[in-house]
Length: 631
Image (cartoon, rainbow, N blue to C red; front, side, top):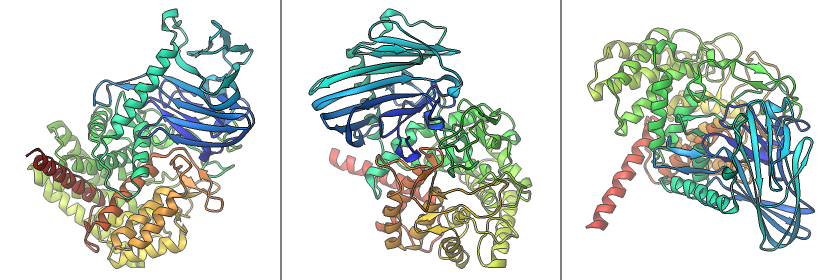
């Protein structure tokens, strides 16, 4: 059975699929990320369903992405020869607007014998509605078949013979050196029959693959990468792009649900939605690479999704803006390696998390700083958010970690409330927009005093006000620009986190009670927060070593999960995780800037603003160089 770190991702910016090292596709939701899965063996090895390509007598396996793309190549070296499997979800663009792109809603696989000769078995066995039932299978020709049940249909097309069994479509092919075969599993609504002229040919498959490679390469070529680990930064950017939902501009936190944070534990959540926090931070990381269109699309999604009263803002939404995300347990699934429960929906959608206001106003501040337009309607909404923060920051909440326990006065939440007011003041002042600036400044300064007074009482920033439990999110105090990394309170916070929450480069979020049983792995996002602190402290040798160690926790194709088991190095949690890839991008950019002399160690920075400033500066340098060359 494939483990979490054994998977590679393919996607079409509508949905995604996980491909195991053994060639088995074990997770897919058509036609969008949050639809009921058609293949979900990752959550149930017996009845979940998969799309398997299994060459015989495999000696070893090597995988890579086609350069600059999310098209996967898996090479199986077998006793009798070598087989190369190329996997993609076909997609093509109709311009640079990310919302204008076409997805076929299919998985396309090319099998090519590179040398010798190969026997390979194919099994297409979808199980609809998260494996709840077996659809009806039938052959529609010697090379086509369909699986139909409920609202779903999977149309299977191959360039070689297929065979039908009661609960699957299967095939066994013999390929000689230089020969290739194709097979596609394409989703469609069950009420719509596929017409004969809609059945794709080999030439169609070749064109679909070529268009998909072109789409990804054109996108990745637009990334301005001036960073440590250029190849891994580009891979992280491609992963984040694959997690965007093109029709609306939303970004999912991860394409999966209920992959466990502890094997056998209950911390299993559905991440196929858009958190305000995750989305804004992800967009900041792409924006820092010069990818502006996604920022525009996300801004449009946010405007439409949050339309209405600022007080009705949620911390997360469905990818089309849905507010109702009821949390349900799928008790017919045992979960990944018997880690139950399997959940769909997410009850955290209705939690109170004050940090989301800061993240949203911060993203608007950076968008405006980079030349983006803030409309009167945008500003009215932002004013409403700042007013809520001004009157609500003294109240407790569930915090960034969404504790299912009593609300607390989380330091991270208060920090983001401070940032919300600070950035709102700065937007109003620089854009000369109407606002109660004096009132916001008063509350902002009171918030700062509140945070500093609590930290000074113990000498470091804790998880919540009045408590003594450390929390990795306190490492964001300098990142948000409240204090410089050189400040004694920040230095002591770094020391406490490293002594009580770290295993080498791996950092746990916290160790305080949170209303749930069991434990979890180290949280990779927190490792990058610590890395950023080291960078802005000027401890660059340590930062270099830490970045190298964290790179070792990516899998063979450069993907990170949410968490890592410090004892085994095993990937845990939903996969791949946007937060981790976002952090890898920004930390790599920070480290490159530090090595280039663009950071004044000991100064106060808003790290995200500093990254955007560097991007704008790089853009001006490139434009000037172009003018010189043109002259």
